[in-house]
Image (cartoon, rainbow, N blue to C red; front, top):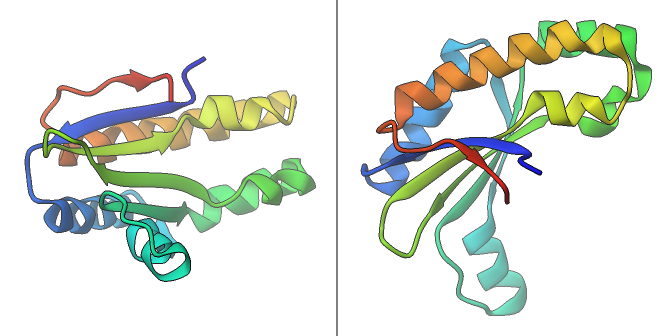
Length: 138
């Protein structure tokens, strides 16, 4: 089952992270957390890993709307967007599929919110990618 939407970029990793954060901001999302997985695994385990960042994105007005409909929705927030380097050097930007995420709640009142978030994430991916991405099964 696909649970992310994604695109790829031939830009440098850090440039893609910056472009992704800017595109999220342009769509009304703040990045509440930025987890550098590569640095964390090196520090905590002494393990080398590819460049990999997890951006916890939140649109406050949409989060409030969702929480009013489903108080437990906070367990699924913020929405994660990941940026990582593939073995071939291309950079992947992948966002959680909001429809799959809120589908867990089984609350039809969240459908329009998920659609709004999905459309915003698609614009984010379109702005940072080179168009070669698509749904992912990861």
